[in-house]
Length: 69
Length: 199
Image (cartoon, rainbow over all chains, first blue to last red; front, side):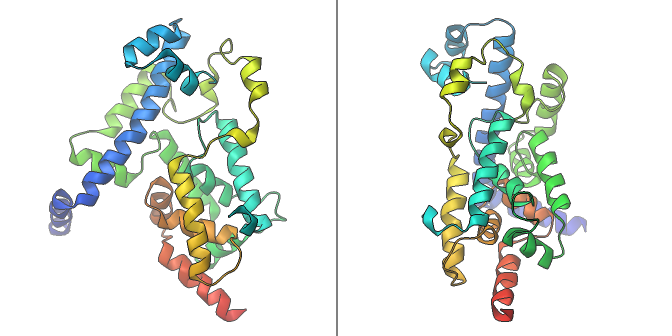
């Protein structure tokens, strides 16, 4: 059992699939985190401009993406 | 491509769009499609997808439970979490911290996204037609794959069963949920071919 688990772990290290999957998952997680943080900032009374500045994107971009929430 | 969709498949797509809207999601994702595939309403109780699932002895509730669990984790499956853990990123810690600060289920796309009544302007609502709800890249990939799945088993039309198969075939969270319930694209294909032979 532990052998199998170890083997699977080691195989995972060298498997490009694991690395690629991590990147795709991180991207999805990032989107969710961004939505949560933007929402929280808006509830705290932040302007779209202030949020955009912190995120390093344009006010239009952040409003277009999150404005309807 | 949509002209090749059966009524079943069209209902599935419409339901997914409705669900995404109700969730306050930015786009339709593969989990919306999967949830819609498990929904028997509006189709006289049975769809190609549900019949195919039943052929594999898998209940819709089993799969739906997996979807809920995955949503809570920011749309990340066990496979995703393991892959990120491999990089030293502990998703459970992230989920726990975020829920601690922003409430349970904060990472899920959900109605709690409406904590900002002022910003939910009537202008925004009125100008948004449900058909303007964009499809995410993964969801688009699933739609395209469903055509391939139909052609693969020599079906002329794309039914909800082919969409279910596509959901299992395209790598991502929906495929992971299905796999966890023991549903793979290969098993679905086998059941489809068996159905054809029996017909």
